Length: 452
Image (cartoon, rainbow, N blue to C red; front, side, top):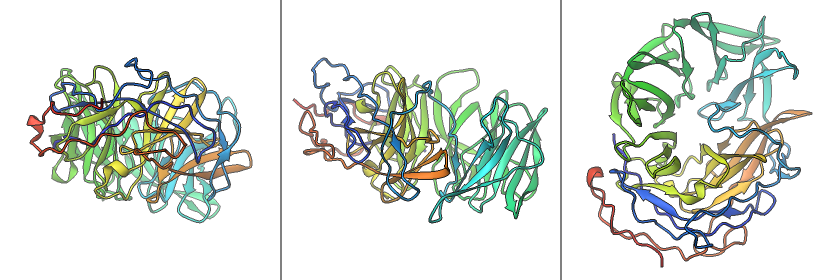
C-alpha cells in the first residue's frame, strides 16, 4: 500500500479570534506541498498578510466556555485554565470505536495519594452517565483501560514482570471481572480501540521487531498475531473491520521513522504507507476509513509539520501554514466520519496547547482556515468525537456534573467570500490546475500555480 495524498491549499490572512463558539475566528497563511521524493513544491498560496513571508502571529486563545447541560451547545464563560503545554499525551478518556462507551481511570477524591479505579461512560443514550467499576483494591495509575462496544472495559495491569488483562463489567452493586490471561514482557502498550468493537490489541517492542498481540476477543487468552520488523509505535486503524493497522516504524539499526500498513488478516504483511522524502520522519496520526483522509506529522518540509493527504491519491501531501501557529502545540484528535469520498469536507478537531491553556481548533482541508473554539470548563483534554452531521462532542467533568458532554457545531467555511466569522481571505482562492494522475514515484513537482 502506498500513499500520494492530495488536495489544494489557499491562504487567507490571520485575523484575531472573536469570542464564543459559534463564530470563532480563523487563521491561516501559505501552504506547502511535498511530493513523494520530498522536494518542496511551489507554495500553493501567498505569504502572510504582512508580506514578510513569515507566518502571522498566532491568535490569542478564545475565552473558555462553560458547557451546557448534556445535549446542548456550549456557551462562553471564563478564561481557560492555565496548564503546561504538552505535545503527546494519551487522551484522558478513551472512547470506543463506535462512540457508544468511554472509559478512564479516576479517583473518588483529589488527594496526594488518590485511590484509582476504572469508570465507564455511556455516550449513546439521551444523557451521558458514568458507572464506577471499583474492585477490592485501588488500581495503579499506570494501568490502561479500553472500552469495548458491548459495555465491558478491558484493563491492563503491570504485575512485576507481567502484564495481566481482564474485562470489567457492572454487576448490580458490584463489579464483575473476567481474567483473560497475562503476557510476560517488559514494555507493552494498548492500541486504540479496534473498529470491530470486540477486539483489543497491544504492541510489544522487542530487540529487532515489534509483536502485535490480540489481548481481548480471542478464543484462548492473549494471542500473538504478527511480528513487524523494527521498533513500532503509534497505531491507527485504516478500515472498519479492524484488519488494516498503520504503525510508525523505525527499522533495526536506526534510520527515519516511516508509517507502514500491517495486514493482520494476512499474518502481519507489511507495506509502505508514508514515503514523503527518503530521510524524513513520517508519522500517521489519524485516519478516516470513510473518506480516506489522513492526518500526519513529518519533517519533510525541513521542520516538523502537520500535514494531510488522502489514502490512495496520486497528489502530494499538503502542509497547511494555518496548522502551525507559533508558540502553541497542535494535535489532531478527531475526524468527522461519514463523508464518503469527500476528504476535503471532513471537519478535523485539534487540541491546541499554549501558555494560556488548552483550547479546541477546527479545520477542514477545503476551508483552509483554523477556527479557534473555547473548550468547555473541565474538558477531559484531548478527548472528543464528531457526529456525521458535524457536531463535536467534548466530554467534561465539573463540580455537580461529573459526567457531561458539550456539543459544538463546526464553524462554516466560505473560501470564496466572507467566512462564518465575518472575515475575508487575503487573496482570491485559485482553483487547482487540472492534471492527469500519475504513479506515485513520478508525481510532478512542477507546474503548480501561484497566486499573484
